[in-house]
Image 1 (cartoon, one colour):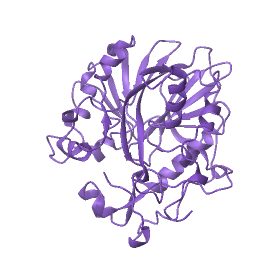
Image 2: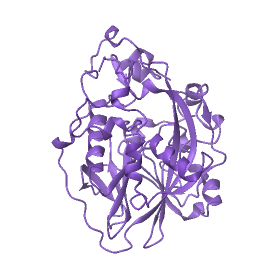
Image 3: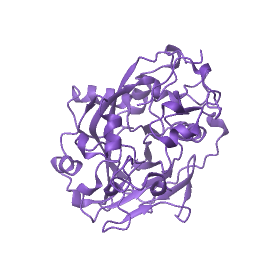
Image 4: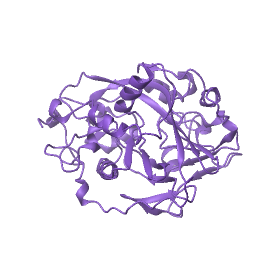
Length: 377
């Protein structure tokens, strides 16, 4: 995997990535969230710990400590509408074995310390009382290896939903293209399974700080958010978790990997964290290398920073909390609640009742005043 470098001055910054950072949330337009139309217009949110992986911290956070490692949980979510019982999954995590990935991806992650899933996601769901046949759709935040899972393990009645231009960016898959990071079967356009790729023709509406959202159930209980930045086609989800009062969880995918990147961007006295950078020459693919200059783990860093600001603005609302796809702070508090790390399935929609948002903020793993930026900030 590409890693950060200690001396950024040695490399041309043709994209001007060193200077930019997350915008202040005060600059964003915000539309108040609509009140639930009925008492049962909300979803239960089940957090599933799929696996974990260890990588260099400086890939995610611009720090002068280029040797620091970070072990991240990998989450999947099962969402169940209380009123009608319909179920969807958000992200599928890792496939169960290294050999389940394309050769290109195997080569990239073969030396990454990974705790692999103990079973397929349908098997894990079944162990917790959820039959895969009842999952009407899988929504993928994006198609990186630690999110894409294996849709082929689900019945063909389960629809696959991906963000705008995902197919164009990721396909052809392996074996059609030998050096693809995905499999042909990961994005089975034109097959028996329905694959919906969101587009300009989708019924987008504004949702809070996000200009484009899809009201999936039609009652505001689940919005699919256009959250481009980390990758082409990256999407997130806003889930209503209760009514009277209305509360929400923002499932952020890989919009950020470290909470301080977005949680401190509004009204803070110190500069917010910035994403790690690496030279394009160290990129994983010819396409990356051709971009030149300094790159980030986020494909479009200015767009990613804007997305982080939108997340931060959403979390400024008392009734909204954010959970990242690899959220360390959430893992810390659930580990404590469960009496250790040996948990797999937890209901988290009651976050407001348990005051988890406050607790998560107190558990901030990386505090700006404790981490020296590679640029000396």
